[in-house]
Amino acid sequence: MVDNEDFIINDVDDDNEMDLSSVSDKKEEDSFDQVDVNLQEEEIEGFDNLVEEESSKARMIIMDFLEGTFKKSEAIAYAKGFIDNNLASPSSSYIYAAPYSEGFAVEIHDGGDGKAYLPNVLEILNEDPLACVCVKNRRRVLEIKRQKKEAITSVLLPEGIESLEENVVYAKPSVKMRPYSYNGVSMVLIGSSIAVLGFIFLLLTALTSLFVQNRPVKVLEVTKTSELPVQQWTNLMKNYDYEQYVEKLTYEKGRWKVATRKKPVEKVVVKATPQKIQQEIESISKQIVEETKAELKEELRAEIKTGHLLEENEKQQLLEILKENVNKTE
Image 1 (cartoon, rainbow, N blue to C red):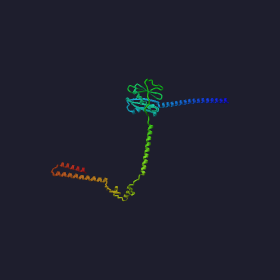
Image 2 (image 1 turned 45 degrees about the vertical axis):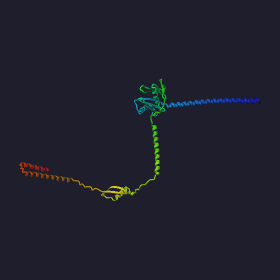
Image 3 (image 1 turned 30 degrees about the horizontal axis):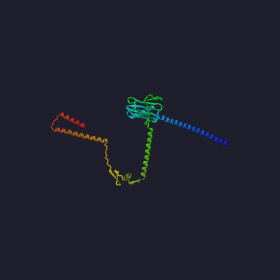
Image 4 (image 1 turned 30 degrees about the vertical axis):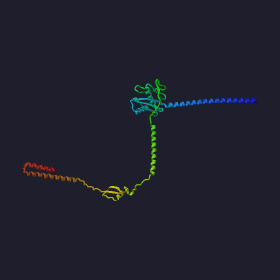
C-alpha cells in the first residue's frame, strides 16, 4: 500500500512539473507576440508621421529677390504672375513677401501646409552672410545664398542631390503664408454676413410688429365724404356760371371757400381783304398828289409876290417841271 501511494504521489509531481513548463512557454510566446505588435505599431506610427511630414512639404518652393520694388502689392502681383504661368494648381499655392535690403524677397509654394521659410532664411543670412541656407521641398532642395549687394539668389537643385557647400544651414518653417486666392474664404464670409444681417432684420421686424400691434391707434379726425375736394367740384358744376371761372378752392376752418373771376372779353379783330387794301392805297396816293399840288401852287404864289419876272423860256421850263411832278405823283 505504501509503495502504491508513493507511486501515485510521484506521478502527481511529474504532471505538475509539465503544467508549469507549458505555462512558462506560453508566457514567453505571449511576450514575443506583444513585442511584435508594439514594433508593428511603432512602424505604422513612424510611417504615418513620415507621410504627414512629406505631405506637409510643398511640391516646389521658389524664392526670388525683386530689387527696386518697394510696394508689397507689386511683389504679390509678380508672384501671382509666376504661379499662373508656371504652376499646375494655382488654387493650392501660397505666397509670402517681405521687405529686404533695397527691394522685396518673395517665396512661392506649390502645395504644402503654407508655412514660410523666408523669415528664418533672412535671419540666418543676416547673422552669417557667408552661410548657404537650404530648404527641403518634397523631392528637391532649394539653395539660397547672399550676394555682395545684399541681394539673395536661389538655385533649385536636381532631384536626389543635396547641397555640396560647406557652410550649410537648413531653414525651418515659421509664419503662415498668404493663399493664392481668397475666393472660398471670401464667399463664406459674405454668406455668413448676409445670414447674420438677415437674422437681425427678422428680429427687429418681429419686435417692431409686437410694439405696433400693442400700441393703440389715435384717430385725430374723420373726414366726411361730402367734404372731400373731389366732391366740391361736383357741387360747383351744378351752379356753373359760364361768364366766370374758378380761380382758387381752399379749405379753411372747416369750410370750403371758392374764389371766382370773370372771364376776359376777347377783342374781335377783322381781317382786311385785298379789295380794302387796294382802296386804302388809292386814297393815300390821292392825298399825296393833292398835297404836292398845293405845295407847288404855294411856291408859284411866292415867286409872283416877290416880283421875280420870269422869261418865256423859264416859264416853259417851270410848267414842264410842274407837269412832270404832277404826273409822277399820279
